[in-house]
Amino acid sequence: SSFFDTYHPYDLNVAFLRALSLSRPDLVSAVEVVGQTVEKRELVAVRVTGPTQEGGGGGGKDVVVLTAGIHAREWISSSSLLYIAARLVDEYTTDPSTARILDAVEFVLIPSINPDGYEYSRNSDRMWRKNRRRNDAFSHGVDLNRNFDDHWGDPGASPNPFSETYRGPSAASEPETKAVQDYLLGIARGSKGRAPRKIIAGVDLHSYGQDILRSWGWTHRDSTNEAVLAALGDRAAKAATDVPRITEKEGKGAKYASFKASGLYVTSGSTDDWYTSHLNATGWTVELRDKGNKGFVLPPSLIVPTGIDAYAICKALVEGILEIP
Ligand code: 0X9
Ligand code: ZN
Image (tube, rainbow, N blue to C red; front, side, top):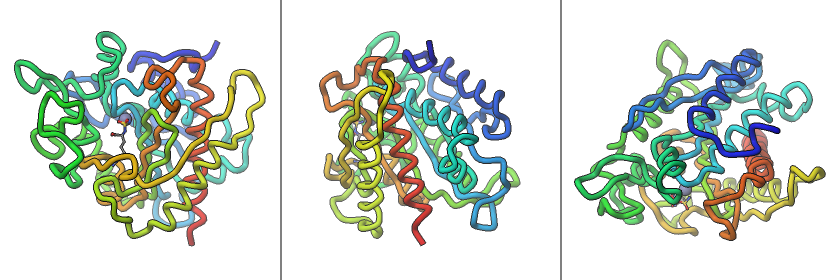
């Protein structure tokens, strides 16, 4: 049996990362605490990178941010992030293309932005989406992917606390949003005696739909780098669609599409556009499997097949970005 045979409680997902870091301290940092949730769970991050000091730049290595679990019911996103972490570590020594990536960049991995919601989805209401803020006597939850500090309050989010896309009372009102924003801004600007770092990509994993979405999501207009981002997204979609699969466990392939996030629908206060505008990174939302057959309730047998998709997507995005002159 393997860790990826089933979905696990949040604490066990964190323990997996802790074990990874203890087994390969040369590649994986200790688990860092990013902040606390409404229900006082710890938000965590780990960094994964090759033991070499720096990439091409001269300062520290460029950074790739990978986040998951912002929507409670999208369990596959967190499992896929852990799968990516495990593959990066496993293949550093066996796959030269992985070594190249880990020698060039540092991955910052946040396995869940919304662990309170995840536990509520596991234990009480499988279709829960938001965090577990008590809004008033009658309603709970802010949609954290409408609470980020980019175009907050614009169309594409709801002011109504009952709504599944409730934006919250103000931008970054939620401790989860604030902690993730501040942690990533700290990396970009430099903090705790560390030099500022260039964040080249922010990828937020979701489900479902099998789509690779690029900025903007808040407007139908193109971002400044539309042509480059479209090519990157297309390349990642193709990589995921075309991964060769041999064993039974690897499952069958799935077809991914790539387009502007606004092509799905316009939203405000979302991570992808915040990554683009505030981190100066290429911001992405990746909707993993499936296309709606099982939807959010994706069977555990598809954890590895979907993890393989997610790994191919992230690898292709990073390789593509590193090729940009
Ligand atoms: O609505 C969302 O937050 C995402 N879809 S989901 O079904 N996982 O909830 C899509 C967000 C895409 N990004 C933007 N429109 N900015
Ligand atoms: Zn989502």
